[in-house]
Amino acid sequence: MIRCRSPPLLALRMLSSCTSHPNPNADPRLHLTIKPSSQNPQTSHLISTPNRISQAMKVSTSCITGSADPITISKRPELGNQLPESDEPNTSSLVVVSFYKFADFPDHADLRKPLKELCEELRVSGGIILAPEGINGSICGTQEAVDRVLGFIQSDHRLMGLRQIESPVSPEEEAIHHGHTSSSPLAAGEDAPFRWDHVRVKLKKEIVTLGMPTVSPIERVGKYVKPREWNALISDPDTVVIDVRNNYETRIGKFKGAVDPMTTAFREFPTWVEDQFQLDETAGQESNGSDEAGSPEKRMPKQVAMYCTGGIRCEKASSFLLSKGFKEVYHLEGGILKYLEEIPMTESLWEGECFVFDKRVSVEHGLEQGSFKLCYGCKQPVSDADMESPLWEYGVTCPHCYSSKSEEEKERARARQRQFENWGIIGGPDKGRRPTVKPDDSVKNSLTELSNSF
Image (cartoon, rainbow, N blue to C red; front, side, top):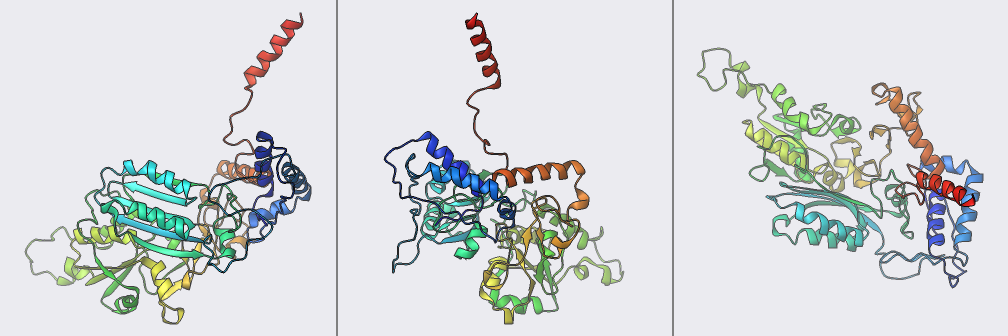
């Protein structure tokens, strides 16, 4: 059985397949059942339009009852009424792996094409950033496929020893996170960060943007702290705990007693540090007998402990603090995700949920999917209470972005949402397709026929 978030989209894809590849020998026993997922609120609009869905069903079933080739996709699960019974483990279940490595990598662009081609061949989706300072990515696919991609990356000796965090995706979460079921190779909607048939491999100046080329985690970083040792460190009264993430992440969860810089982007972090721990202009000069309470040594914390989602931002943040004269700088190894994976709730000092950059939106202890959804207007997490607000409009605005958006921006968002409701994709059914007949050609043809008639 195939379950799909966007029935009209499926029908259009099936129609495109069958009209371009007729085959009178196709197996007439192949049939399709579409079951909308109730977990995705975006399909609720489609469910409320039975006429449109029934028409799509008629088109899709007529396409595969003998007039078209069966859909054949290499290295994907076979389609059928039921999955084959087997005692072997289910190798088609998905995993999400986030990874990074700082390295001296000036020829990073050479890796882009072969890496993208391998991911597409293995149906591994997600996003990967390549830069002169290393690699950073988050990918989704079967365990075997993901392992092959990670092995290929680490075949370059400079990228060996990737720091990585793996999260399993259950069949229930998979429909939300990935946009399809383990028995279906169909792609997710256009809004899905991880799509079965889509991977982005981008070239950038930095794998995590701080905007300070002189800060290099390759040269020096703070001291790594294991999750099991983290509680004792942040409970020390001499430790200042700093959350290195942005404000839309910190507002749904953080460690108890942590300082929130309230930044909107990571590149704002250095400015916050310099303002928070501003050195006197007399720093480095001989003491003039003034009160030492205002000296830089007194204003700097004895030790700093930092954390972020997966650990990568702390690498640069700790390197920056060391360059500014901080003596004892620590950061949580593996980030919040590793802490939530290893530390049980009964021993945890974490409060709330952790924002993640994929379809899950947020996770809790044990990396279980959290309760937050995503505002597609600003890509920020929203709670059930936020969605009860009069400022909430699905696909358009939420209480966190309503006042910052102009009416023109809101209207564009409403137009995009209508496209998704009508067609299942942003841009309509012809998105990405070249028109078969140009408008000018049709006019020329009409004039030619008219002249010939005379």
